[in-house]
Image (cartoon, rainbow, N blue to C red; front, side):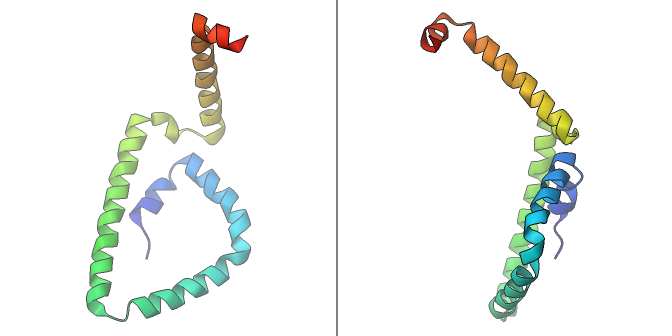
Length: 112
């Protein structure tokens, strides 16, 4: 089963980059995981009523995840940026926050 949220998330460069890096580690064990999940799925889905309920629940969760991802990327448009740009932006903001906090006298006393 393919999830809509997976396709939607993979349109974001930071997600694609993360998946690419994680895949380097998981590719060797993927066949074993797929085999095990196939066995679990076959055993757990022997009842058609249970299968229907699970499918309905998964479809609903997939839609909720898609909506949540849309809301997140609307609230934080930088997530659509390339990963190096996103890292640079985050570093710049962190530096600004550090400078702001360091401007308070109480913080300056704590630093000393």
